[in-house]
Image (cartoon, rainbow, N blue to C red; front, side, top):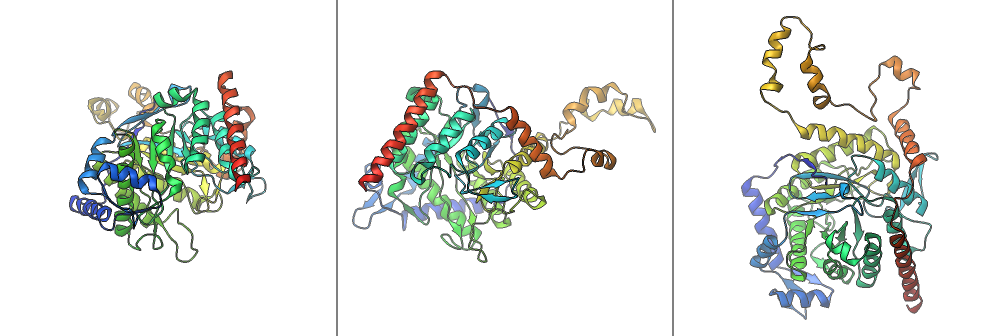
Length: 488
């Protein structure tokens, strides 16, 4: 089982700031409360002890309900690899993991054409295989989408591609109940059955409410996911300056209020159900009307919400490697490194979107490979410095003496492999060596690595009965969705 690199403890909020934000979030949950399109949520919260106004459809959550829910949610749980315990991840505050992709991006970066294009299910398959092969990618999400399939069944094809081509944990979409039930059936089939999924959950179920302060009928699938034993990733996403205040502090307060509502909802459905916070602090760019991926204020917000999550002693997930750059170039690497390193230093549990470009509009396999190397570097930073008698090497320094060399000393032979970082993708070469090897830019080296992976990669081996059951569940989901479409 992976236990994750030990993250840092970078703090951006004072204790007074932290408590003021928490109290402000609690105040919003009571006044004005949250608006619910869903009668189901009104029922759940009314039964749980919240104040519910059926006429206005407002749910007011008292502070004591929130505190009880935070205490009820587990601070630690295992997100499993399917049929592969070596891919298990221990999720808890302060442990750091990185994942490829995010939600189903509408485009795909085609290296040979050097532009983004409409993706296909085959792109989903090859991208998943790349993510599965990279050693520093801990969990795998969609890097594009099965864009050559009918729109209302794309998600089913996306997860068919993921389930057949990686054993690493993933994140599935939780939407309205009929869709969610079908996708959970596929997930259970890919896991070896409902009981296995419940005992060894290998997916997080992402729930995206409507900011500001609203939950929708499309969120009702959370009930089915929790009852199926799927840990919830609750993901409010106010856009700073659009669906959230134009101040970093205001957006933090709003998103913390909304994510705490999700914690309460999860615990009302099933006390003790695992939940991962995803309080986004996205920024609305006033020039382009896009959601930024590389803005400093967004990073400030992520530092703050990570500190809030550690205060609540709950795992947290957020944007990591996603960038605004349009190609896998120096800008892309700079933005990705800033985001991922800050997340690591703050102790964010799960950082997503490695490999996504252009505000998440498309995924790029070469960028995933580059991000894998960046994580390799970050892990060395997180490892830190071991200070003891052996590593301080006072006697060794005395032995070598004035003007001597440590190269031949046995102390060097004992320690250099564990102390020194050895790059894999970023090759250390002299100028002459670099020129003789073709003088390649890093995106060219990354593309060669993608080709090497795909030349030997194939689907992950599934037990024959699992393969057949997954195919049956996929076809059933497609058939029922088509029948529903014809009735409408």
